[in-house]
Image (cartoon, rainbow, N blue to C red; front, top):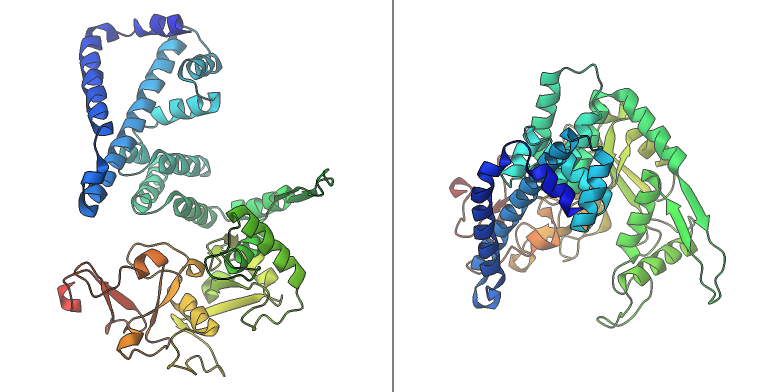
Length: 429
């Protein structure tokens, strides 16, 4: 196999540049060797955070460069008459990779000139981001012109620079649904066709396997049960810190607990059946195939959400002009209590959608109620004094030199502004 690689290397005038390439690789190998020898325990948090960020960018650029080299090597073999499958098989054996991974690298190397390809080559986004964008672009209708496709790719690339792959995937699906309404219907029909559940035979030890392919509706129900009952101490009462179950065992117990409760438990009770919250606007209701999210981040269509709204474990929030319409409910009945009520959390989800820290995409179900004016300093537990913050960013708030502060933005009532360390006024931010 290695001889096959050598045969290709002589083509295309690459021999003249081989010494320079060899020098670059020797220098790179020496630099990586030096990096691997670093004693990371000798540095403080700021230095380590800077190093982690820079190493991440370098890793992304190396991945993109490797894809480009792999694509060029495949092209050289192709000019000698070898099939793409044969090239992938040869490289997979030589590099110890799956053929699918090699095909992916070859394809990515051929997309270096695209907006996402350039961003990946500069380390601004990951290879996974680039593949998600490429897949979304390939799903655009053939009637769309080249400039429009390029603009679509540029917008997704811009979004990807500050988003996790899962959020990018959801954003790409949302934009495709807007551009191709018919594709939204096809997507739902495909989801329904794929749904399945198979309960395996009872094994010798008495256990059984359950294999499922979930629709968005099914995933929303499972994910909510895991969020409500799948944490330490969930579903199985125990002393704090004494829950020695694995995450998989906790997930099993959460689902069994949910199934045991059934749909007869009053969802208003604090310890009852898991509830799902979907945030909708009147405009979204006009498009049944528009994509919305549950408070745990699961994406589903408006039609799928509304079809479930009649079930007991659902709370559908309708927003008008950015304000929550909650009549006959005293949401701030107990401002003196430190812990926010369930209805207060629901209102904040309706208002904020998730963590309010700039750029954070954590969903509401994984966010905490944060007192904008600290409760320890007299801040009431009210919707007006509340904001959603994920556990990471909620932990940023503090009195120390590295602590962030939060204030109510007077220009946007109901919104919270996060001030970095050393900034104590909105005008300084």
